[in-house]
Every structure is written in structure tokens, then in C-alpha cells.
Image 1 (spheres, rainbow, N blue to C red):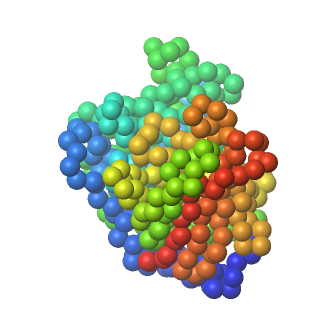
Image 2 (tube, rainbow, N blue to C red; image 1 turned 30 degrees about the vertical axis):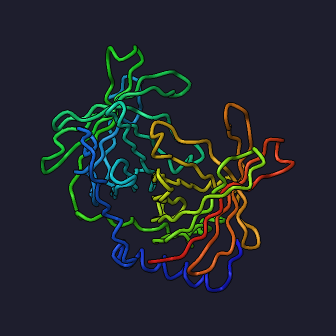
Length: 364
């Protein structure tokens, strides 16, 4: 990736501040973002207790679904903060596996319609894939979340349980079932000890990977001026202008990042989370979007990278029931500003209609 020298200077400064002092170095109060007022949803505060930084002790079966009773034990660290005005969370994790350090992060979002949370996981060893969610909520101090996945080609049920969340050492377990939930093999247990009430980012990875710092320029807080086409793919020239904010922080040791967005759309403000991760096999980045108005699904990703200071990312999507392509461009990147543009194509990428332009101005 090629940036202006000011961008490179800012990038190095940001990385130094992360190592030196975490969130406080940015002066970014949104690390500890509070819940949006005015909602009576009973379970919207289910994850308030997890916000902050933690030391984590892990106990994991060496072989799952194999009748094994041979466990590995290792340490780790976790940082959790709120998104979506408190109706979502991100938790970044370092696991000191016996075979080497492992990174991963979790995404949670609350659906007011069902009073349930969805939890997705991004494995730093395979960050091009967001694992299927588990769904559930807390009752008292206990939380149960279930879903389906595959393990070594076998269809399984998956269960996450949280216990004693208001005690001095909350703990979590993961179970797999091959008989539809009649019986469960618990294969992983985590025990949490709080180290910090206000979350701070975990350390960046020391080693470099190609393009690993491409999005370092975006870390921090921004005010945003949006310009959105009222109607897409209809020949419209009628635009809506509105303001917004973004808070972006690194995950996966800098090989991923997550941005919490507030869109002050006239008459219908909303929030969303941008999720990005580097594919180390190709050097390309993937970028997903979680819309706070539809918190049960994460949109398909766009994929791409930077060349000569311009980032181009393209992916398949749908609009009003028909397949389209989506393109995202990042440009005009300096220490204090950037531009994002979204375009759609209904003809397989032969022509593009720009439908959203966002100009970013750094505030911290």
C-alpha cells in the first residue's frame, strides 16, 4: 500500500501509542461507550459485565468428539467493548496455545424482536470466514447460546454457556453434540479474571505480513459527512446529506479492525459495525457490514486491497431480490482525512453507479 508521507507518520504514531498506553493514548471515550437510552428491552444489558480487559485461563480437550479425556491448559488475554450503542460487543483475544500464539475475535449483536443475542467468531488462522452464529441470552447469571456448525465434515450442534458472570471469576464452556443436543461433550472451558474496567486494545503483532497495516490509518475517532443516493440503480440523481461518527480500533494484532458507526440519517438514524480482516494467504482484505437495523445477519464481504494509495474492494451482493456487485473505494488518505465510496453494478461490473460517499475528518 502506498500512502502520503503524513499517513505513514500517523500510522507509526498510532501503533506506538497502542503499545504504550492503549485506548487512553487516543483520547477516545467511545472505548467505554454507554448504552443508548430509552429502551426497555430486558436483555439488552446482558454483556455489560464483560466490558474491560481480562486474563483468561483455558482448559481445552486435545481431541474433540473422540472420547478423549486429555486436556491442554494455557493462558490468554481478552478485551471487550460495546458497539451499536450497547446493543453489540466486540471481544478481541490472545490465546497462548501450546503450539504458539493464536488470535481471534467475537462479534455479538442483540435482536430486540426476539430478545436474543447472536454471537459470531472470526478465527485469526482463517479470517476469511465468519463462523455460523450461536443464539441465546442470559437468565440471571447464566447464559446459554446454541447453533449449528460442522466439525471435520460432520454436522454438529454447538452450545456456549456462561456461568457466575457477576462473581469474581466468570467462566465459559463450549459443548458439541452429534445427536441433536441429547448429549453434549464439553471440550473447552475458560475462566476470566478482570484486569481493567475500561477496555484497552491488545498489543499488535510484532511480525509483519504483506499489507498487514493497510488499515492502520483508520484507527481512532472520526466525524463523517455522508452523501447517499436516495434510490439505487434507478437512474436517480437525488442525494441526501447527513453527518455521522466512526470509532475504529485494531483486532487480530492489527491484521483486522472493527469500526463502530453512527449514521444521523434524517428521520431515521441508525448504527452499524464495519468488520475487516486480512487474508494472509493472498494479502487481500475482506470487509463485512453488520447493520444495527438487521442485527441477525452479517452482509457478504467485499474483498481487495490498496495500490498507489487507492483501496478497491469488490464483492457479490443482492438488491431487491436480484444479484448485484458492490464496490468500495478508499482514497484521499492523509493523517487527518479519508474518503470512502460505495458503488453498485447490475451488469456484472461492466458499469457502476456510485450511491454513497463518506468524507472522514479525524477527531482523535
